Length: 116
Image (cartoon, rainbow, N blue to C red; front, top):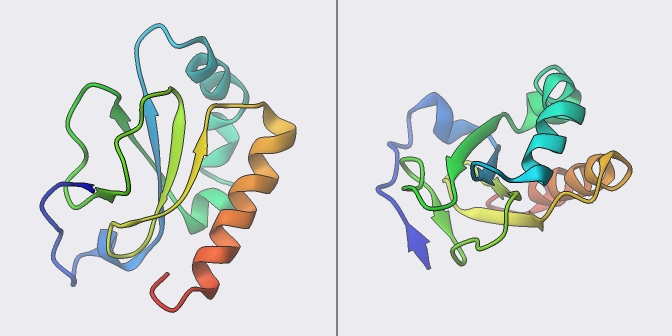
């Protein structure tokens, strides 16, 4: 398990789902996501339910994040529960037609889990 220091339970970030995008410079699929999805994501229902945060593949994880395993492909999208623990993962960017339904499914699943 890969982790960083946990955020305090009372902080705003600890009260919501977040979607962590693992990216790296030169990643053409990251560029495609940034071009095709990122502008709409922030204002979408998915973006409201799980705001996007980012981390570099070779850099440190954001504060309070615990992953099942370290990503090795970019982009990797990791849904984080309110406690910062990974609850879902999408490895790669297969395009808009797959991204939106898969992220919706991850969010729905996280909302129905007892700790999600």
